[in-house]
Image (cartoon, rainbow, N blue to C red; front, side, top):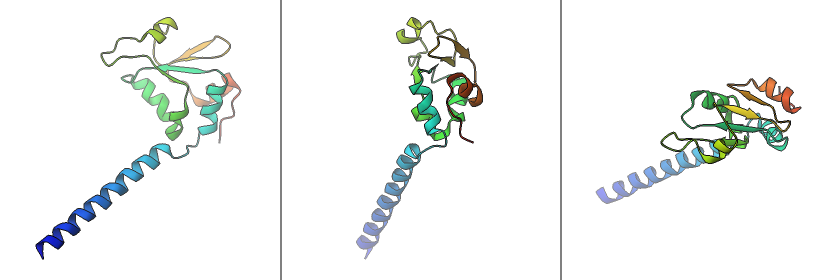
Amino acid sequence: MKRKSDFTFWIVIVVVLAAIIGWAVYSNNAPGQYDQFAQCLKDNGAKFYGAFWCPHCQNQKAMFGNSARLLPYVECSTPNREQLAICNNAKVQSYPTWRFADGTELTGEIPLSQLAEKTSCVLPK
């Protein structure tokens, strides 16, 4: 009898783990409120330079929720916080930095409304 209960226990564990993994995968790929807006920023030539360790960069990404995965994001930092060549070549001085197709840039946490104005992308309500 003990073997059957052990088997049932492991089946339950496997099912629960599969559900958790499935939910995690779905929630990271679920459509976001700003998907079209983030895609428009990218399509209009905007670039968002940042670093994984930068709290302002994380805050900027958080403004987009699940749509952050679609941002035209360029990681500028190595694991030991040295700036990568792509950002050195672009002369990125601080994070976050947004660069636009017209050659202008904005630094710091930029409100979504300002990004919309700068790129003519429609910000969803």
